[in-house]
Length: 153
Image (tube, rainbow, N blue to C red):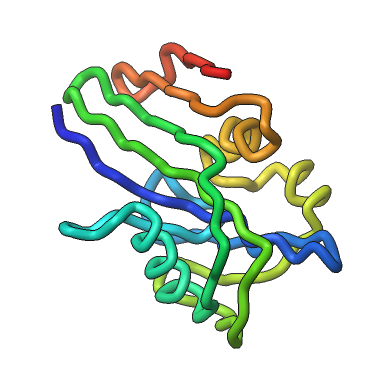
């Protein structure tokens, strides 16, 4: 089985109750509003990959990140599993860039983000982990369609 490790980080401005959102346009199937993140590189720790990806995508330095849970996309047809490590922080500094190669970055009210329709695929499910409802979610796909979801508390 091929396994791809990825990360995502919700960066939360507690003072204004806003989250940093990426309006992703790069990859087919991943378009829409999401949190910044990326892939774990060879010989890189999981946590340091998240810190690096956030710096590359936002120009922000993040600290005190916490692992909130794991989200998986399991492609049954090709026996491929994408494992997303979901991190959270409210500790950051630096000068935010407005865009990167994947899309535009902006701060959005958390409640607005939760209600908005143009989030990236899986974000509504991912938010169940960020809200603390589950520690892990596995989405199974067959013929490019969601066939089942396992929720782990």
